Length: 262
Image (cartoon, rainbow, N blue to C red; front, side, top):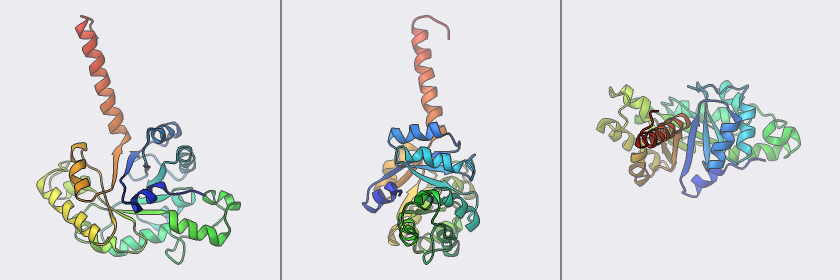
């Protein structure tokens, strides 16, 4: 049965480092797992991750122990449940604005009595019924699955503490990208207004006893670590772009020094 390494680290007060993947490539998922990331955000909201591609994504994650977290396109029980049944170890639900919406997300992830997810014990996360008993599997799944909710609108920021206090919520992620656009500063994740709002949300999440998360420019990570954020992710496409550009510059500079045109 799967063990949620990311949830374990967060419970111990450690930092969980993630990476966002928009492409359902098993090879790349294995590679980032071997690189040492704790979890991967499989993006259905903006990327090419689908229910059909999910099983092979999860299999690739299982080879290295990296935690597969899916970001569904909508906060709907039928969408979340479908990804969970294909092996996701948790969700990162976008655009959550109220405690009621937070409860709806938990309902899609957790089995009764914690949620409303339809119960089926003969699925892949229970070795197709050859793992735990039905009762054991229900308890295991409710314990090991991770629920992360994104507050990325002014309304969500305002209600961050109420959202975090919903039973079953593990992480509340402050989405500064969407927030910056909605506050009139698109792309300016470090704008003072955006930072002030995000800081207030992080404090509210901590008051509720939950883990704050965020994605931010690398030079801002120490700032957010000092304020209690323990759940971060970068972007696979961003890392590939930056490392490729740096490599090309180094190679071009080497050629130039030798008088060779490249």
